[in-house]
View 1 (cartoon, one colour):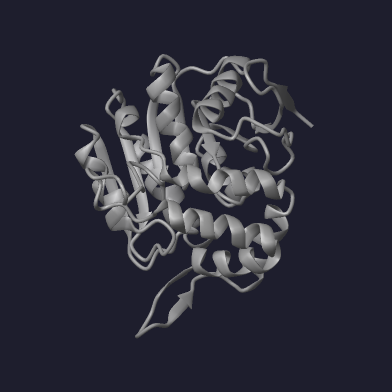
View 2 (cartoon, helix red, strand yellow):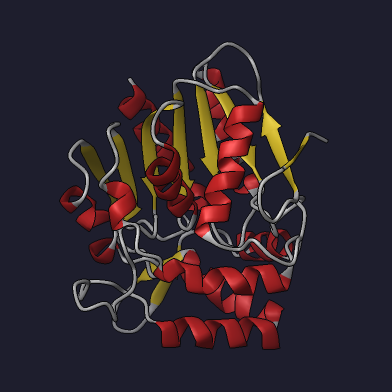
Length: 280
């Protein structure tokens, strides 16, 4: 099982998967509360197109180490940097889903684009989700909501995850109804994957969804793609993907009609097609 032992602050082990080969590398960064397995319907298409695909489990998630510290975006970006250095990647494409989009933004904000030539944000929490900031009224999340979610997760992990993941994979329907866009079994599978992570690590990550990435995005010098479900009930399109052109000069936005937050499971063919078209 390939593992990277990080050497900077808050050291831990990161599990990663690497298809290897000579193709242009695509590095996939998963969301919450998942693991690198969330990319399983996307990676074969990318590999068949000739790309080298690397995916890893964030610290505290999946098969990576479960340290007691280091749950912040500077450390996550440092972990990603160590992975790119270990694999000696260049001309890389960084693809972040949901909170994984934060790693992509913070990595480029801190480490630049010497190894990276394109980026993709899928249902990402960028540019800034915090609606309590005076200059960010279009955000869709608050510290109070984060604290309530943390409490719910710690009190009843399975019950909380079932409700969260139902919304994750659903879109609004008539009235107050919602429509599930994946088989119900997908929710149970996602709960199983989430349980591979440490519940305290998962809880520590929830307030991070309030992180302001606008200064990181200002440092982008590479083209970016935004893919976002228009029915996203976790990270609303209007608060996130639709706002990215305000902060990136070279960006293509692809809204997915009837797309929930969990696009990697509900619309994997669309995600793969848009990503391959963007990379040309």
